[in-house]
Length: 375
Image (tube, rainbow, N blue to C red):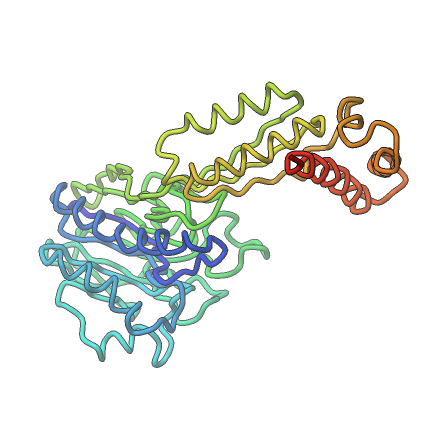
């Protein structure tokens, strides 16, 4: 049997903090469905297993609910088997009841009850649909006694946490990582973790097909799974499905040359216009170099789909030339000297030092802009 394992589409997720760029990220999540369908056809996979969180909320608008269904409808040769996850649990009159009333194509099958589902190829899917956002019991426990024909290929489909199983910190929607063995599964398809992750030979998290936050999957993935028989080990291949790359970078800038090198390195990254970059900087710069850094980062915002630069770790280290640029010998020079002293005062709380640092940089920039504006 050959199928695609995917999860955590979270259709309808908001990206408001990205402003005018939000639309592209929301559309990419829908486009990923088509890439999954195309991959299924290209690899001869007749089934796609969606391990929960197809939607970001259990009560999306009718349009949001219909949009992924219409994309799955286009791939009539592929059967899409879906379980509710913690973001879209099967609540009364929730999205799954509404979709049933609106009408689903024959190739889209939400699995809303904990009972074996026979596939045309002879395999059986054992679903563990979530009825609530958070469960403390392991909803896969019934699989150990689930009736299927002798020698049937059994595939588990669940949404929850296996890492640290049994701990108080991860008691929500637990899944025993040994379930594949105790229930005689050929494969356990999991959702909830937004990074592709192998737990054991037969247990995998698919990750998300389109990332939604920094620190999760760098680029969207789905898994192509091939199983020769109930006792054969699965062959798992990662497929790239994401349009946007989410990267996090940390670096130091202590010299003007470091600022220029950073600019060059970021511009050299591949596919920057489809990259969401989280940049965390540390170091200490002269006020002139700090101003240059700010200007370069402002220009780079047009190079990336989104650039989130954290400059809190970049401390001002004003040089004599910086002070002379503010004021050679006068009230502004005095103010700058006092701000520098507060910024370096170990007796102040960090927040007060940060205010002094920001004020010193702003004073430098204000004077520089005023001079540029003077004919």
